[in-house]
Image 1 (cartoon, rainbow, N blue to C red):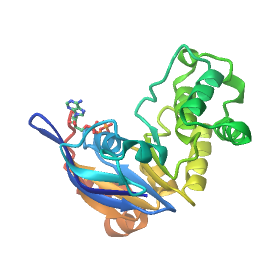
Image 2 (image 1 turned 90 degrees about the horizontal axis):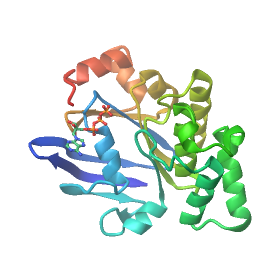
Image 3 (image 1 turned 120 degrees about the horizontal axis):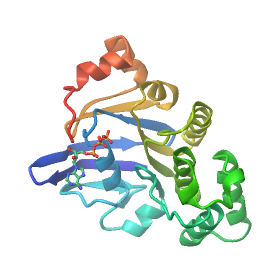
Image 4 (image 1 turned 180 degrees about the vertical axis):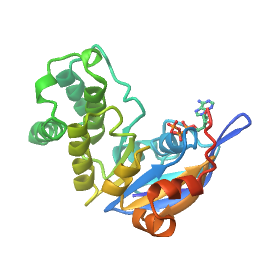
Length: 239
Ligand code: ATP
């Protein structure tokens, strides 16, 4: 699904991401954990082809994101931080627009739009413009757009950020279900979420991987995920 090798990104003196290597197989939900500024979003942006690595490579379903960007992007759905979108479009128009971009047509197109509308509970807001939606609904529209073409790899940057408890529960169930056959990478600050949905956790600190284990192995070693997080990270946030 995904293979990164020594992936690195420098911003001037800051090593935002510093030599990250990992693989994700189908059937894995990988959680990125780490303090603010650890490099989680930057790693995801490089995998999604939104940021060019300073060095190292990322391959999505065997396609290098730099040299085969179209093939890599076809296989991938990406929910960026904050789910930027086209505020003046209605949800229905936006999903149609994304379906056009993804080349979806006929019954398959209808079925995929129906699937994301149902699973992200968007039926009641289809005719509303995105700029008038609450933060939680905007995230769900972003998730729907990432999922529309049924990609084999999903990269979701804080997918449940801003959702109410019911929706958080529904989105976590959806992530678990999607993760049965696909590869998923999520970033989260919720350790409860890691325990609930992730089959594997990578802890990132100051741009480097400091642990790559199942959540249960982290709990067994440290007593709890909170303790693991405190022990493994230096507790230093970066801007
Ligand atoms: P958070 O949990 O707060 O979302 P994160 O782990 O996702 O944090 P990143 O957003 O990847 O962290 O940032 C990693 C580091 O890279 C930070 O020090 C950040 O300030 C820096 N950084 C990210 N993007 C840029 C940029 N475009 N220009 C300069 N520095 C950047």
